[in-house]
Length: 249
Image 1: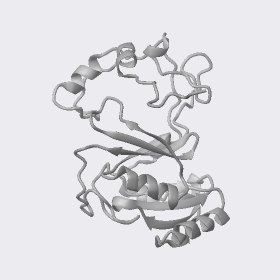
Image 2: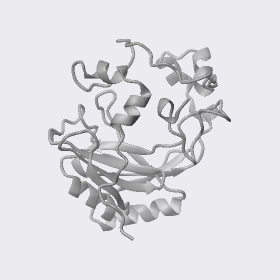
Image 3: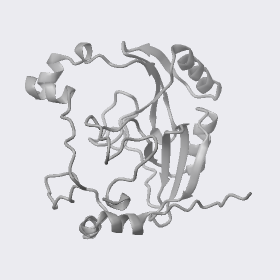
């Protein structure tokens, strides 16, 4: 098995081969990508209001005419912005945007984005930083397993900063809500303890197209073409690792 035929291995992440973690799962959000029509305004807001430095700004790989910008939450976690020339500036509350942390929005869309700090003191300091930049903040509010403040970002983003601890599912999974979601007792136990990964002898083959499964949308006929490629072909032809600005000694 080659690197290009499996997932590339990273020093800080789990490995696919060798010492396999049977409880393998994502360990955090590397980046959340948000559409924008004004990259400069978003990067400025996140730098000045929230203190998040810009770490990358370049032509998005493989997407013509599109900018990609990254602001850092931590060295392993970023918020990214994508400025596509066809991004719409139209905000439709209840459809494209929720407008608040409790508002309706289209299924699959981001309802709100919650950012993490370690302590209540840090949360209050973030509240003061945000207010000092002229942005109104609601809170803090104590939700039991987390404490939160709420405010608006640019382009209709609904934002939250919170601190909290590990959630105890024995206290925070409501039987009434579970039943209303159509989740049986056996299904709930499976949700609380996902099945362990069963190691395979080699890379798992690409499954055939199944309309019942979620699909990306690259355009008519393009999905089938891209998914028919081998992993090695995708690695070799889609990868772009050269930074736009070379370092000079």
